[in-house]
Image 1 (cartoon, rainbow, N blue to C red):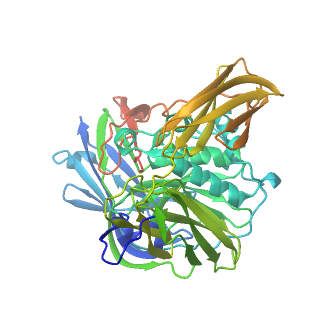
Image 2 (image 1 turned 180 degrees about the vertical axis):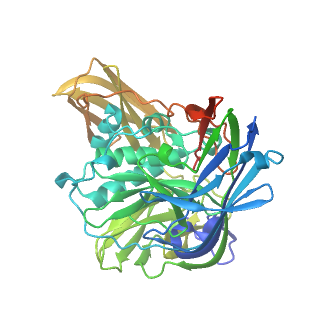
Image 3 (image 1 turned 135 degrees about the vertical axis):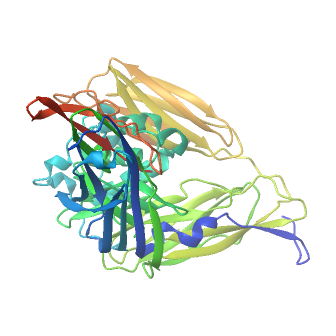
Length: 571
């Protein structure tokens, strides 16, 4: 190795971390003013006595949210109509009634405004772990299949049994939330205008928050963990917007949050504001519009972005103790390891996101993790990384890194020195994911491999049933590349298959083709009769349900009841 002197020039490369000024995962308490609003119009042949009722999903007190004050009103024409309220389970609606639409036929527009002050709080402390195999009494409705959450699907069941084996509930929700967070690509451009089911998301590996929640819910329900869908507002590091996440029952401790979009499980940061809790995303209805009229009336409406003004914020402190262990200097194209010795300071179970941010020139896998710490537990978390293959002549480079937990933001660096002799190139093939797909008697197993080394590598795959080899393939993986390999077997029956992968270490995976569930049916991608629109100001083409409601007057004029439903697409 060359000897460098103090006069030698160096460069200092920081990891990019501009969003760290306000990390949502670090928020313990918030005090905010919130504005929820929608506007719309009505048209048609309006008669005296025609009525309009608007039900708008509003804010309510929850275990983690307190409504300090709230003002709800409907602006129509020159009038202001105050709300009455309806409560449906844990959900609250502001109800506005217009008794004679003809009075407003000249200005047929309306606007709903809900202004409120909220205080939210978050806690990382969890109750006792629970053995899922013991079952949950009286919670069957939270385990059932719904439109977007296919718990009877064979592929999803097979993946659940392969990937999430533990009977520990805390470990199961940690594993599931982490897998969905790391394996589903957040794709706003292609997935914001609609909602896709768990099965579709498993196949496409893309979506926004509703898709993350649907797939997570399918896995947790298949595991036997009661799960419900939550809609509301959250902060993504830059903006507040409509959002969807989950709650699961933890043993006898009650409901706890799971947000795989943001990589949180067991706790939710306090930048989450709750609106509705339902069994499925399509049951979370932001605005319901009902008309009673002699002739059909068309109602169109648009849900606006939530507006949030922050009055105060508190961040987590003193959750964990951290010691970073890392090399002071490494060479080019060299694999090195960074360790974080983390101790839980709480006398309770906690699951927290842990992240090590590397500079983009350094190759590293699984930078973001979810870690479960038992009361006062200390554990060592490690990351392997590879330095760049080339450096600037005459320079050594100092690469900045940042270690993050909800209460910690620790910066440090590693110096990379050019080597005097040429480094030996190595292949570093790793298994990123194994996923089974089952359709019409055919089992397809997709294996995702990555070579993070500087030399081409290979992996040998074998699929067998009761020691009988069914399929095999040896594949090359070029340096720095990711490759997906598919092994396929036709005519399969409910059995346990063994997948062996040498890359270069041998790993084995048990793939289960489940039994058919009685009454299993195909689930459509969208509930019939409902068009789901984009949120953040997106408008909806609302389905008009026309129903004969009765007979009015001597002339036997049919009264038409038009019901419109608006669902916000949460992100």
